[in-house]
Length: 367
Image: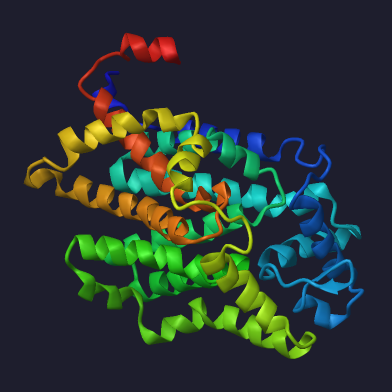
């Protein structure tokens, strides 16, 4: 069929998900833990699993017997739970939360893209996301950012459902705030602030900020902020004096405002993000051209596509602005924005090729 008629059937969708499972899970434990993060995170999870610190060790994290204040506990809870039946948290079990979170991101990207633009775009976006090197690399490491990406993408997905009036609003609001709450338990306030900044930016762009209240009723903050605050309070009560100062003051505010860890210049992500999104950052000029020629100059019938593009651009832009302002920066901080970037690339490809019956000669040569 011509590209204009292209649709992705169940077999193709299942093939992409099957490929994702193979690429993320096969041989997951065959490589030794590598510095800087994997040995440290595995040790924290193993000390939790072993129970050497008693029940207190489930709330207060420890590394080599010392209180560990760097990160919240969700990833370590998952790794320790996976290792409990086997008596040890090894490389395979420690990496499994990242791998499963990556699979979930690929699945949600496929579903979200199919809802926004059609099945062909959804499948292509999932394939692009899966084959971004940094995404595939982090999917096979003991790393918190893939789990954070899954939480943030779930929140973004839920917000779109609420904003578009799809399904039961109360259930989607609960799911939105549950995802935000899990994001906070994964990597702190950034799991709440960045997705909410994207939502606010989108509604501000559409001049509908008053609609924000539909997704943020007062009761829902018990799900989004309650778990993180409860953990901080419990850990502060059980840990030695100074825990809150280290966990909140040094590791949260210090990283953001003073660059106490991974200090980088404000323009860091202007070159780091394209490098980390290779090879598909090569599609970004096409995204710009499609946006300029087809999406934003379009007539009234293109409003649905414009709204979806505005939303995805806000998701990417919120992460880019937030982490550029932060004094502490690492390339992997942008991983939660990868699904939105993949969706923009996929829709630009489908639209750019929609009037052709075959691929351009240049595209086949490059492929």
